[in-house]
Amino acid sequence: MRIAVPKEIKNNENRVALTPAGAQEFTKNGHQVFVQETAGLGSGFPDEAYQKAGATILPSIEETYSKGDMIMKVKEPIEEEYPLIQENHLLFTYFHFASNKPLTQAMINSKAICLAYETVEKEDKTLPLLIPMSEVAGRMSVQKGANYLEKPLGGRGILLGGVPGTLPAKVIILGGGIVGTQAAWMAAGLGADVIILDVSLSRMRYLSTVMPKNVKTMMSNEFNIRSLIPTADLIIGAVLIPGAKAPHLITRDMLKEMLPGTVLVDVAVDQGGCIETCTPTTHEDPTYTIDGVLHYCVANMPGAVPYTSTLALTNATLPYALELAQKGWKKACIKFPELSFGFNIIKGDIVYQAVADTFNLPHVPVSYYLNHH
Image (cartoon, rainbow, N blue to C red; front, top):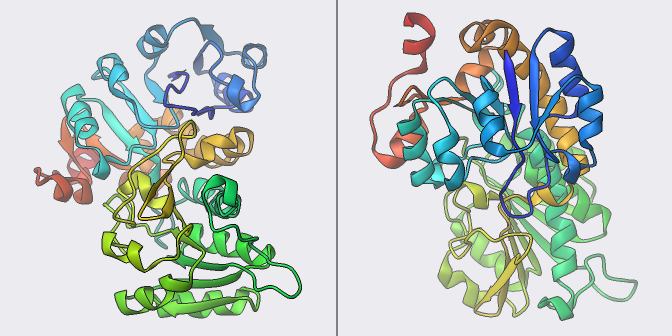
């Protein structure tokens, strides 16, 4: 199979979908790897490292797309890439279709096969290709939140862990999944006073046994959220409903109840966000203020730490990518059944229910393609 790795062109996206080590695994197994010039540079991987691993370096994005059977990316294709996507392509990347109708329509029109990292789902409901980036984003959310709480950056002017004789910052985390758990570890480690809200009692039982004493759990509902926000310093949105839009847990009217300089970090922004006033921002221009409340809503947070993120992501994606290359996408689902949940659009049909529901479009079960074609 021919594997093509284009350079990411989203704002400040420095990650790359394949490392030189991954390229070597493909070439060792008889596949051809084409990498666009400087695609790995932002993550610390120069072109020479790919060449040593047996990959061919190509000068343009157009040429890279045209050479590939499987296109490996990190972020969803953006508008200028739509015309480069062909019917014979298998695209393996993050898509987050539910928050992007133009992208959904473009991929339907392309007739390509769209395999989304974020909806590959194991039997135990874990999302193996989302976990590494959720871990990075969860930890970063606190790092960023602590930073923006500083007065010159628009925050309340409060040190996350406080010092003896002063109270630490109050951190509210909406969602106790991977992002929320990692955020809680970081905030607790810095000495903050942390409350995680979740709707699952079993998850909260688990968290209360593994978390340090400065982390408390609380049932997530509007009453509890409203009771906590007037004294919160940092609120982190960490809610995920796989493949679907995140619900708004913080609504516009709640901002008036918050202290001026409160910082909101919405990690769910690439799925529509769980804070109503959040709209996606970039690393170049990451924040804005509404009603005195600072919003940090960068949609590709892990892109700011590309070396860590690229290694964490490719550790998880490579085994699947190798199987897809060796066996083809249908047979790969036999060894890795979780891959079948990753298919969102196949040959113009939406095969992922949550995406079809979001846009009121027809849904074709993925089994139709896996069993009949």
